[in-house]
Each structure stands twice: as structure tokens, then as C-alpha cells.
Image (tube, rainbow, N blue to C red; front, side):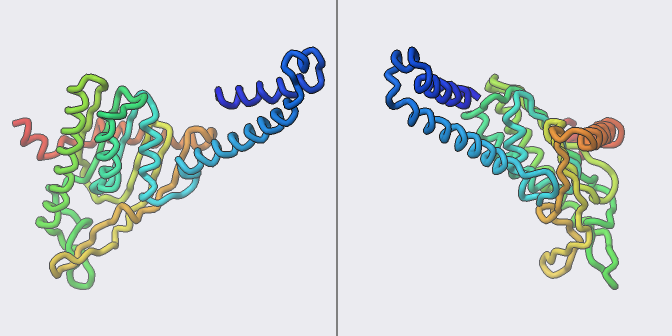
Length: 268
């Protein structure tokens, strides 16, 4: 904004110097018309580049792939208070983005002073049809071993992010918390909420298969999930839908989600 204002002032001053004699005499206006025109060109280019930068920083409203989560995480961390909520499978795609962002906060905190991360993943201690082993006639068969594998992933992500959060809080520059909870049921939906103003929602492809040392397993791949983007700055229906999803997540977190087994074991 300051640059735009300065360019506009230079342009107006150049025109006055050209056409208002006292101003021209005072400013020796022989070269001011050319300078004013160059300022105008600079103003237009600056405005265009600013819009292009914004477009490159945050994907447009509509549908994006899960590989675009990094731009939404980066945008969220431009705020003083950052709040990121996730509901889905293991959250691996989001974890990778959060890990690198939290690592950079120690040296480059920017405006961020408070970070709240909430993650809901399935309760892998219970029998499940997804994820599961592919059985006869492609029927899903519960696989305790595969569930343990997924649970250990989530436990590792929780421990690493929580460790970074505690370290950043100890430094004293900001307050950072990360909490994992579990819900009962298959991972059908992927939901990401950024600062309560951007919502990304999609459906996992629950029939996706993965071969692991011979057998095949039904294992949804979050990074392949297409997500619908709802942006609070678009108003109208988007704002109403965002409010609905935020309330839904808050209610699930408060009424349905439970502390995972690995956190209960650590607290015992």
C-alpha cells in the first residue's frame, strides 16, 4: 500500500509540475512529464505483479489437490494467531507441511505468536474395514498388523509435532500447542480448516490398494484426494458453509474424539 501511494504521489506531482507553472518552476519541471509517465507505468506493473503474487501464493477458489496444502499452511502462518484443524486418515500430507513450517518458526517467526494444531485420526485400535487387507473376492478383511502400522505413523507425527511445539513454547516467543485425538469409524472424509476462514474438504478413494510384502491392502492415499476450497473472503454461501464445517469439527472434537492410546500410555 505504501509503495502504491508513493507512486501515485509521484505521478500527480509530475503532472502538476508540467501544467501548473509555479509548481513546474519550483521543481524544474523539464523532465517531470516523462518521469510521471514512467511512474504511472511502474504503478500499473506493481499492481499487476502484486495480484499475480497473490494468485501464486494461494490456489484459486474451486478444487485443488492435496499437494496444494503447503500454500494454505504458508498463508495461515501469516496471521498472529494460527489455528489449523484436520480430520481424516493419517494426515501425512499435512504433517510434512506443518513440520517444515514449525521448524522455521524459531529463526523466522514473522507475525505468528500463537499456534493451535488439532488433528483427528481414526482409532486404529478397533477392527476396521478401511484400511484392511484385500481378501477373497476383493472383500475387506480386518488386519491388526496393518492398523498398528498406521497407528505408529500417527503416533510418530504426534510426537514430532508436539515436541516442536513444546520447544518453541519454551523459547518464549510464542505459544504453540499440538493435540491428536481419535474418532471411531472408517476414514471417508478429509477436512482441513485454516484459521477458520479457509476450508478444504474431499472424499478419500477408499478402494485404493497398496501391495506390502505380497498381500494387498485397502489404503486410502491422502495426497491423491481432490479437495473443494471454501474461502471466507468470498462471502455469501462460502461463509455459511465454512461456519457449518467449523462447528462440525468443534463438536466432533468436543463430543466424539478421544485421547489416543499412545497419549494415555505416556500420561500414565
